[in-house]
Image (cartoon, rainbow, N blue to C red):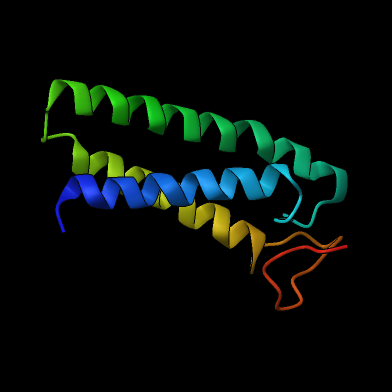
Length: 100
């Protein structure tokens, strides 16, 4: 796999996490405090998307690895926050999706 393919996969995971968070299927366990997580997730997704478009246009390959590493860490922190790192109000019960 080349770095562009890996970047595409990471971007799609980030977009999926963003959508799932906005429609309420992913929960951070803080009740109304979950709203705090929306802007950073949306902002990270938009920034990653814009950087990917710019790098594709310029055909510059030396910046793919840092973007992949940073975005992967963001995705992993979101996944951790919705599973093991949930807050006390809705603690993690082993299910990933929060279905009311």
